Length: 90
Image 1 (cartoon, one colour):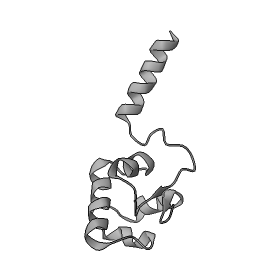
Image 2: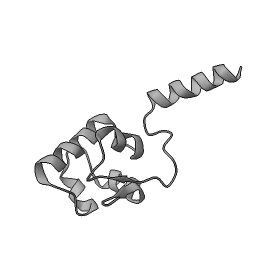
Image 3: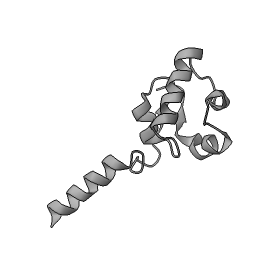
Image 4: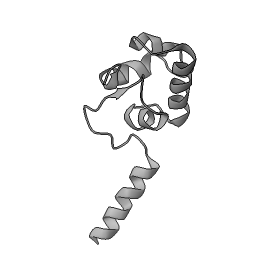
């Protein structure tokens, strides 16, 4: 029974990136991969995370959370929801 529950938990984690991120965990938007961003930021899936990375590659590092507003699909709600998770340095 324990093995079945463990297997279900692993499947849920694989199918819900970010759902099991540790509370208080942060992600550096200037160095993170799209996968790391999607796993940490609430409301940011793989497509939005990839847009964050591509914007960074085209425009340089982010200096503040307001810089993220330049990324398509990132609005005030996403920023406010994730303000405590967004870091700019390691």
